[in-house]
Length: 205
Image 1 (tube, helix red, strand yellow):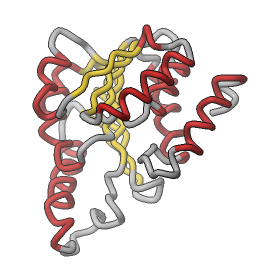
Image 2 (cartoon, rainbow, N blue to C red; image 1 turned 60 degrees about the horizontal axis):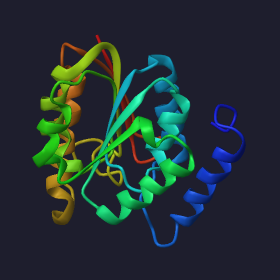
Image 3 (cartoon, one colour; image 1 turned 45 degrees about the vertical axis):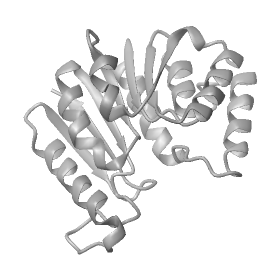
Image 4 (cartoon, rainbow, N blue to C red; image 1 turned 90 degrees about the vertical axis):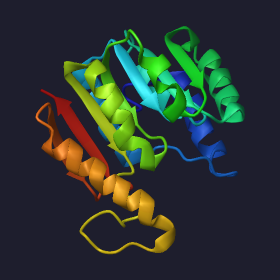
């Protein structure tokens, strides 16, 4: 990644990663991030949709990697989005990133209205992956891709074991999501449970 994003920008992003360890802010793991950026480079997207802004780390990397792309990113945590906006300004990419604040399940229709996307990065509320994708998929261009992070969810999704009660809903919903993306006739999906917390890449065919 550093060979694509060099100099001051890389130093700024590394500082963001270090600061986010305490207090803990969920950032995409380095091995999953490599898959995301490699996929982005192969797609050469014009417009990207990210579900889950956090502090703007992954959206910054996507914008810096795909210099011709614009990014729509959605999150409901105003404090984190404010930090993200400061980061985008510092990296001089704020003009290519549009942040949307609110519960993605409630505002996704207005976010995607009239837009076409080449790359979707799913990294928001895990139980919402499937209903969100059902709405977003018609807006995805052929030849594009969907990268879904945390599909292994703490190692509980793989297989058919009965998860602990407090994780049951998320695990059930994630299994339904994976079944959907692996069987849909528009998607060619590869799932790797051993990278990060599990990652899936679906090509739009």
